[in-house]
Image (cartoon, rainbow, N blue to C red; front, side, top):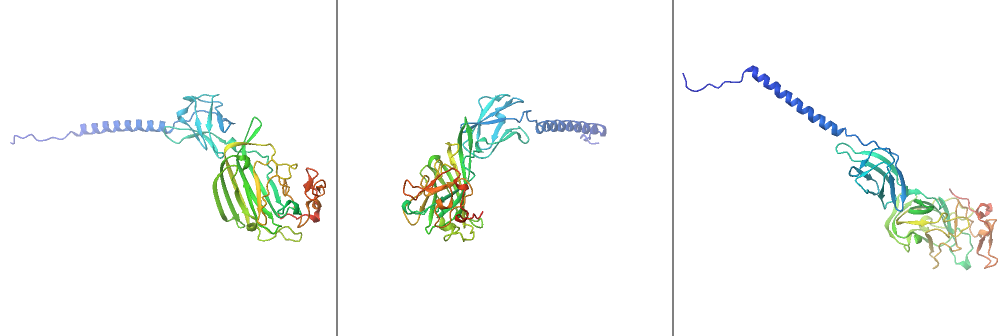
Length: 367
């Protein structure tokens, strides 16, 4: 018989007992882990009223928490064109905080940052700094006489276009502040033999950035330009010869011809700029009051014609311009020549002068 000990295995009953015990422990651990994870994933967002009041304060936005739970500011974020500035560690019902923004576009989301799981949007609001201020009529017809003051026939069809304008901004204590201008320029007529370089000069709008896009008749972009501007920047829009290759839409017998070019221009201002309540009306036939200038330089002379010049007329309506070589005093019943002056420069007798055309003396609009 050998002196060495023979190794023995664990008995069947003891083995089964141990396996059961290990299984119970593992199940209990898994339940604890799953419960903890589930509680984190199911983390509720605060009970908060979504009725937040967004009001402008200068170039910033004040947000008021109207009702609901206290919000910890380290769990709050603003998504949009701005950054929230909190004064304390929490925001209670009735408290306010400021969103600092220098962008005139976009929407704001007030977001609760969960530790685990997706963030919760507590409130969404449009940026009040981009409300449509109106003021400039949605569409203005701008028309030029391109000869010298003494030699003009004042038919105002040498170069004409529609300008659609949207002004974004806000009203504070009754004063209108612009943050962005959007323009669309649609050529209408070229009745003069000259080419005409058309510019927009920001004048009273301060400094900022511009985005210019020129399209051909099919809608294809033929020129794109971005840059910075100040009050003296001449933003070149287009040449009338690119819109119409010859005299077009000015003679009574002309069939309507669509332009070869149209222009879109966006101006984003560095600083909100005060603008008048009504920058153009029927009493300002030559554009006085606009916070920008529309200058035109004809190729045949050194004249630069802009706001305030009698050779420019701005009309707050879908205007019908005089036919070729027809003085505007002959085309509209309440417009006359300046008898006290040179006998030729137009005098607009009423602020509704454009409502009384002489039908066979004006061009029928294409659109």
